[in-house]
Image (cartoon, rainbow, N blue to C red; front, side):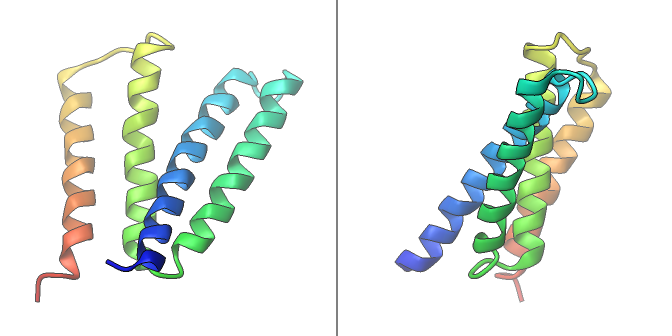
Length: 113
């Protein structure tokens, strides 16, 4: 992996983190009724999408989007359970595990021929 590819992976990690922060800010905005979380939501999503756009320069679209949405989903679910006291069930664990398996599968699908 060269430096440019490494930068793309770092940008993808930034995109995931800010996408998750944007989603949490969305929850805290109470339907855009609270100004500060609403502004944070817009800022965090803007950063996420800009980083996501640049990450796609050297990582396949399918891998970038699967990782951004899948890892983001798992992180948001964990935050929902821990911070917002959402329920945790065996089904939720199973389906989140399937998301992770899907991410791993898409990531390695290009290297298997």
